[in-house]
Amino acid sequence: MEMLMLKKVVRPLIAALGFVVLAQGAARADESDVKKAVEAFVGSPAVESVARVPYGGLYEVVMKSGELIYTDDKVTFFLDGRVIDTKTRKDVTAVRMAQLSSIDFASLPLDHAIKQVRGNGSRVLVTFEDPNCTYCKRLGKELVQMKDVTLYTFLYPILSPDSTEKSRNIWCAKDRAKAWNEWILEAKTPAAAKCDSAVVDRNVALGQKLRINGTPTLFLADGRRLGGYVPAAELEQQLASVAK
Image (cartoon, rainbow, N blue to C red):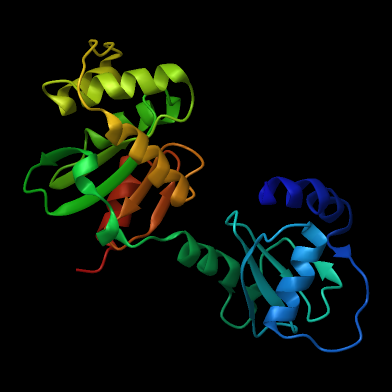
């Protein structure tokens, strides 16, 4: 609801003006004042955090929806864009978004995922996938090329009731990895199967908590998030960048 409100109210103005001007304030605000003013504008307790950044007197505002915007101490405007440090040429916003989207990898309930070990399994990659996701099927063709990796696939059916049914049948299959690969790579419909498939529901709840809004979503062992289809060559580079 907060993200929808922000998009409906703020985004059209930003698109037209580059920023949106709000009511002027007299006194300099601190983080709590900025938070109150932003939430008053949005009309709900939508702010996760507020912090001042060392650029032009701006305040970083992280919304509970995961969005990041900037404002000033008086909340006279919202800026929806990227801050680039001209000295270092670093995209400050991109770095911050990467930090915000990363997770505590150790907290993932890996026993709720389909596990596949290829080669020595020394590298670890987690994916959240909907069985009816087109890009998940494309990703599957990339993942099959990878060696020396342990894959954890969380069934994350968010597209349709059919996705949920397929996820439950795959989870209840005698060989989950085989059922998943046959479907994702060969379009062989998983056979109907019955078991305690509540893990699928728990995966959906977990994904929502992690703000996973689309599939596939991937996580590296250091908690970094990769969104969408990623070619095998790029995955190799990303896995190689994980600190040993």
